[in-house]
Image 1: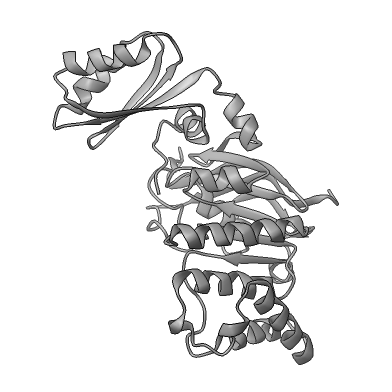
Image 2: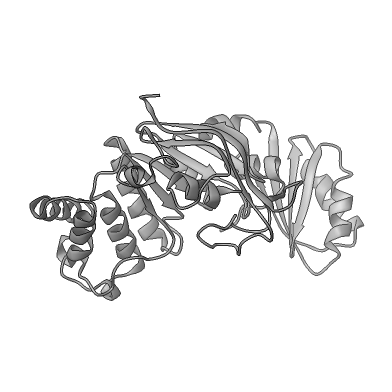
Length: 337
């Protein structure tokens, strides 16, 4: 256990009564969580999970899967109904205040103090965690240099672009040297250049030994950054492996994406599901996703089935095994940003 940054044992969270609003600080993150037999919402269902020290770990799942609640429990913001959670060797329920000194969380919300400069946001964060004035100044300077923010040290927060603000948030979170860093959708809303820049910085942090737990809606982000990935849905762990290990589980399968003109999507899906080798077909708006075993003539059969169902095919793409294919196989839901 000394080599474990996080240990979850039968970790469970049940919300009594109506589910909290999606996206709230203690909500299950949507309406996909399982309804408990005795009432309420079972947001996390006996989760057993271990994250190694220094690991870059991904936690993926559709809206309502239990990701937000799981991170909430691990960062002391949500009290578990049952089970045990240990972060950096500290029981987060028994010793929440101490646990918060060993972890840091960067959420999707910009929580920087707009009344302070970039430097002061970092400096006063360190003072809050009990660091000396000298140590706060030194650490702030180090992190501003590391994230190439030294030129913005005296800038107001409202003068920063989204990418710069995100880098300040991560720098601030690291100031008190947390053993585990939680990142919730860190690149949401960033342009491609900003996203790639942040990937580089996070990779460098992890190579330096920083344990990172990432939630993201970008499949390529998880594939690029994470050592291992857990896929959860309805509060339960569905799969846990390296990105390549997960993709190996769907070798020999294909993911087809069809764009249709106006038509009865349900009729098209029903026709597609009759094709030998098709595992599942789902329709979202004018887009149909088909998961199928690779076989000669598959594309031709799909085109013919769409036409016979009265559909008009506008576009069709075929993908090799991917994390998205794994996700669709396990959850039956499209993973979209």
